[in-house]
Image (cartoon, rainbow, N blue to C red; front, side, top):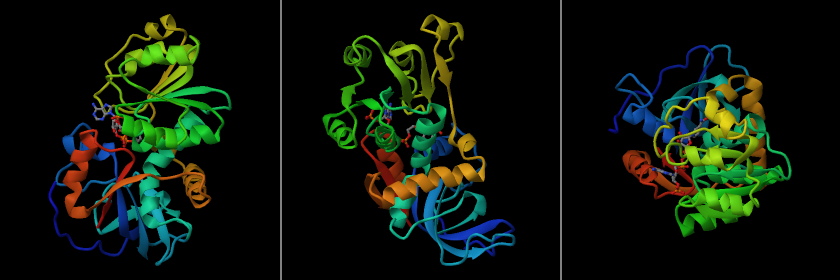
Length: 307
Ligand code: NDP
């Protein structure tokens, strides 16, 4: 990655809004764009979420005006001082929510929201296993699962991260090494209703073993590497299990869903029901360091860049 000076975007096109970026969130997907796991045409900018102040609006945009505080996710190019964003991605940020917090909350927040409210809508008294529970998305899944009344078992790699996960509300925090045995012990042999798995390669197989019959494995990430192909018959053998591999883009494809998910998140933050753990804030010029820190597993919570 290189820091480059580019012209400020000219007047926004139809349906577009130019945002003066106050903060940009760093996500694992940015690493996938950089390494080429997800293809890009180079040179290109990175960054899939941000928050800032509207500078100018294009033709046909009626719900945003210059000066509005806004946030967005899944619009590429937020590692910048200015970004042109389609208005359909934007939401208003309430005065009670800091723009840095809003930038940190959007992508992982809407992810945790769709996982716990739509992919596998958690109910009170259900039990969820959350891998990488102290990660950016993990800490948000825990808090939402607790708001819904579920029990959470989480995996993480260090005592320090385990303490953060407990603080966020996780009922049991365990190490990955023996998680199959531990989950069986905690659930008295019954297994869990759902596994939210962002770790991928290293956890996938054992995750199928800790579900009770007709349980659901939500494989939504691959921070340890891609999951290998499996035979569908395996799902029958392990207890008529459900397996899904969801993507945020398909859960915010319509405007009503963006407003629902972002609206819940920002109002929970304003009402102090949801805490966003900003682990570190870097100047934009240190974006490469932020990637190194996220990749090397040193972080717990959210990393942001300040242009
Ligand atoms: P995290 O903050 O969770 O960081 C990754 C964490 O994964 C690490 O802190 C580490 O926690 C854990 N981990 C386990 N094994 C490894 C490994 N070999 N290398 C690095 N980390 C490892 O990141 P995000 O919350 O941003 O993203 C997590 C995953 O979720 C990514 O794969 C991302 O692409 C995916 N994702 C998917 C979305 C979707 O819609 N499908 C949307 C958003 C994110 P520990 O040390 O505790 O193990």
